[in-house]
Length: 175
Image (cartoon, rainbow, N blue to C red; front, side, top):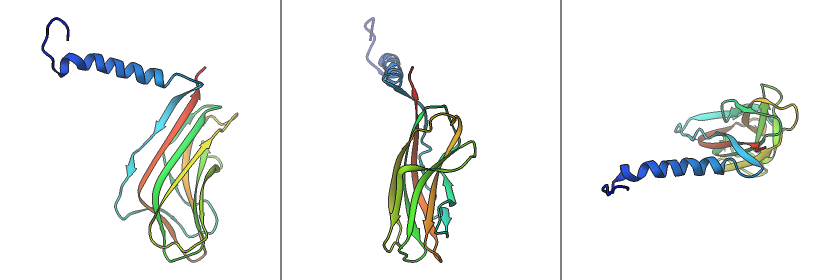
């Protein structure tokens, strides 16, 4: 406080808010990349509801869109993380989840490393966590959507249940 004012929240908040704003600004603008977009819709928590499901042994059916379209530019770097619970209708020895991405409604492309395949009985709801990084490169500017894809053995159903917690970070060249 200046001028002999009594200490209270109002006497220090203004200075601390300005310091916090400057610190966040500098943090996002130092180094090679800066954080250009963050999609963290929080936890989708709809108790006992199925967010998406598949009855197919191939990828791409029952896809769950993890975010609203996010604007990306050429050479952005995108980090994706998602945690969720999933289960199968009966114990089956084939099921899996993976992340995929698409720009402007185009082809869904798998995200490298963001995949889990089970070769064992899975019936009760189990937690899963997927994480991957995308470097789309030239020609991939527009609105990107990230999807959770599933597959399961014939005659069974795999379903994603809440909670579903995801984060998509878009890093952009700082130059």
